[in-house]
Every structure is written in C-alpha cells, then in structure tokens.
Length: 94
Image (cartoon, rainbow, N blue to C red):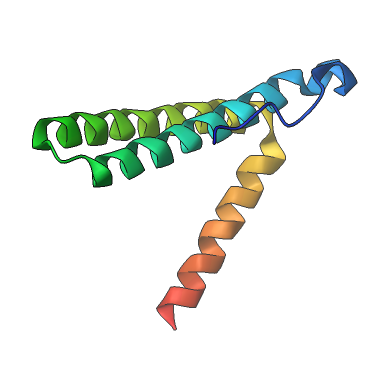
C-alpha cells in the first residue's frame, strides 16, 4: 500500500543523497494524499471526511515544499519541470 524506499541509499553517490531523499519524500506524500482521499471517499461520517480531506490538502503543501527543495538541489529537474508545463499548455491550447 505505501511506498518503500525504492533505492539502496548506500549505492547512491554522496552528491546525490539529498536529491534521492527529496524524491522519496515526494513519493511518500503522494501516497499519503491518495490514501487520505480514498479513505475520505469511503467515510460515512462527514466530520471524518472533512478531516481526512484537510490532511490530504496539507500533504499537497508538503509535496510543494519538497519539490521546491528538489529544484534547488537539481537544476536539471527544474528545467525539465518547466518544459513539461509548456508541453501541457501547448497541448491544451490547441
């Protein structure tokens, strides 16, 4: 159900450790968002549903925080993210 660290950290070059940690953190937050939103859709109590959705929203903020840090650690990631945004905008503008 929840992600496991997808790499053996001792096989990662020291210069890449922070990037890999941040990528795993993003994966973990996305898992949490999915889990909380799925549970909210099943919840019969509206209070439980609201709390789960609020927590999922907080996890989305965490994704943004980790992504921002990753952009600082990996300039290529930042460039590729921008390229991906442009590609989507081009496809939707047609």
